[in-house]
Image (cartoon, rainbow, N blue to C red; front, top):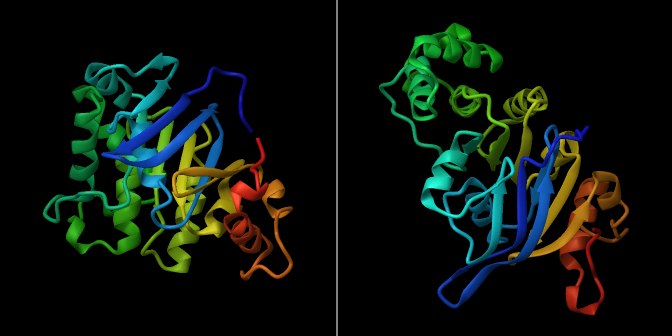
Length: 260
């Protein structure tokens, strides 16, 4: 699925600490256009910190971050990088009184979408998430699934080359999760990082999987390679869940190393 184009995102021995506490151990990776990276890990694993570093919202304590081939060295670089990425945080902010279209238009304005074609571009984004028919409805009247799709429209309105999704299906019912996964699978032109603790999201969408625990890489490889790590007695309702739990149960200091 990945193309031969240059990497959209590159991390080189990136770390992040808060005071004396290191929440992200040295991590290097590259993500090419058209690739979906599934980021798995328990609460407190460092996933959201890593996503914030990837987005340029949080500077690494050491190491380097490059977006679209340009290293992010300053606040100015980070602002420029914002133009090539879309970031959907775990708890996105939105105004209840705004309509769905106004919500997407505001995002388009912040991304520098030209005014002359902003309205048409925003309607197109809502069409892509199957919400064109509710464009004039206020956000406070929409279901949870519709709100999440509106926020997805807000991050894809600028046609980002990198899409960062932090726990995008939390709070959605099973039908809404399936619908959201389908929408993400249709964004083939972008590199996608999907942070989640729901292994079924990764099973459906990801080309590559990265498992973090306590800020440390515990596994990197394909979904099929992760499944090979499943211990028969590990907890879980599927092979992938058992594999994920097996990776977390491995003691990295006793030879339980990741792929890649």
